[in-house]
Length: 334
Image 1 (cartoon, rainbow, N blue to C red):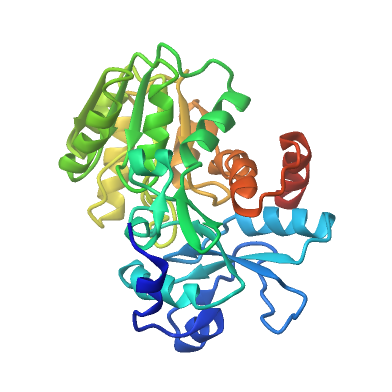
Image 2 (image 1 turned 90 degrees about the vertical axis):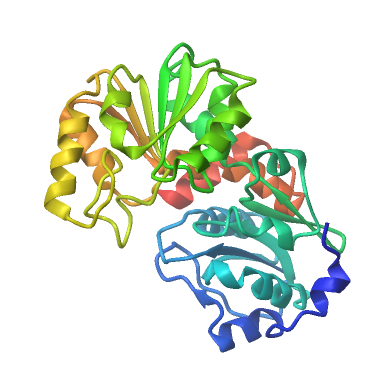
């Protein structure tokens, strides 16, 4: 546990304005409704969502739509920073009285935890944080990614996980919470494929109490796609700057060669399988190829929506019914 006063003493630019002026943070351009006016004296709370590159995240737009509907003096904003500087960034945010928490996106999910005051049970078990809530002076890490992913997937394809072989591609910050929640819905087995097998093994060990789990390298993706019922890309393959690469093959940097391996591996995936992605781009390459193969696909925007309602309640304490929140949030993303 790391105390608030200890973090205050660390060297860092002061407040959100200081972090922006120093270049340690930058307001992201791609997310909708993401503008932030620090001179707006009406603002009482600012929720900062940390990401390592600019992408069209939806949380800010969803939150800000709810704030506007209920005339709340709050604002959410995605900001780009370097995960290696997360300690200094959090220390700087702590000096701003309007910072009320926010979230951890790409690059920050598995880095921010040690710089918070404590983690709730889900984030501590999973070792990954996507929501930072404020409890008095303490900042607490939570994780709603896995819950949001499973709710979104089952909303689009009911009963699609139980009894199925599920292949998780990638073992980054989002892979663990997604694997953890999938494992509790009784799949036949979960296979985690990653370039660094040791990272995949850590996930497999955590979810073994719930279901059969294995870790493999990316050299056997084709073998594991054979017989899979659900495939989930949790990597950044298909997103900028890796938009020319799919998650169906290792990424060597040779676009043509990697595509050939992707197509050979994909040919082994049953056409009845569902291929899901956590990316928020309109049609990332992994989903494009899966759709052309004849598989059903599932966009990362579903997870983004279904994790937002529980995250919003953690952040704000505004206890509106999920039905009301989801209606407003869905409209904000439309």
